[in-house]
Length: 429
Image: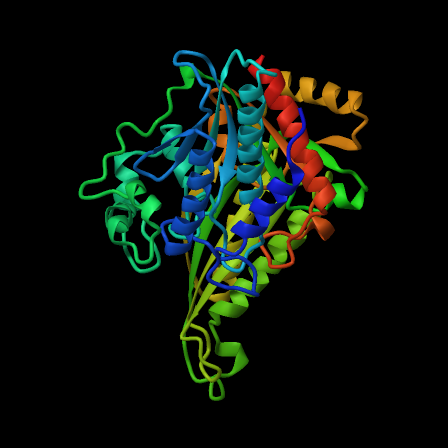
């Protein structure tokens, strides 16, 4: 059963238009007008194919195959549609379009009487995967998995201080929302009690994604089968020194928060670079400095650190080493150091059954592939603790992602989506 490659690519190119930064990558945050337009586009396609659409209070969407029969086990496939600021055109949305293409192809074949599934098939769209609004990745899938609940509606806040509850409650008034998207949006109180999935009804979860790293492209491979997903710890540091005049303060008497941060960051990078298997990564991705004036010594620096690996012991070990490094540098320089653990996720081992079956299928189809880690976290992580979960990667050209230059050869996009189709067919039998 072959997918319609032109339809797949057409959907991807159409959805990349829903951005607030045309010409400068794709910016499409959850719970915004562009998010509403992308959702409306997908819903219209689903309804045109005779599919059912259900939306929960977090705005996670489930699209059911028209031929589904109540009570049968469910095979889920999907990803997210939100992006980072000035991100790429494939991250997340590729997995949604791939799963949707499987849905449309199945609808056509079942209509012709050429295929009769024994399980139900659903496309799932996860809300707020990137964490661009609230600084918490995989928010929608964390609610689906029961890791988040009522408390997080009030504890998660966006940059303007609005809680997740407030943002969700205000969605009914979103400007320029397409008419068909309006039923998505909450009116009044936000009830998340029915958001968690009933995992007893789900057989399999599959997520198609671009790699977002250089491995497949560097090795000339057309596909990856993921067996492990990195865990991570996110730590926030606030370094407090002494602001003063940039010209009148001798170097020997300074307590420069930015210089302290720079020293600690460089030392942490050097320590993690020395890791024997070169798998652990540390990233200082966000930094704020006060007073941020050219002629004033920096008094306060706030920054975030991520440590990621497939081994939880190494994540914890390097995180502690980096924390100790910051404390030591601040003590030597006469600064105060405040440390707050922001969030964490454990490394995930994906379904050995699915990895084995997909590996055999890729070998039989003579696909150039490898079984590999995912350094990035994905919504699949949240479901993998409960149901058999698998991930398929398409290569990222030059390993670029979360940037406007993000891209993948069309042949690879089609090939990996076809492999998703083949995998879904086996799971539906």
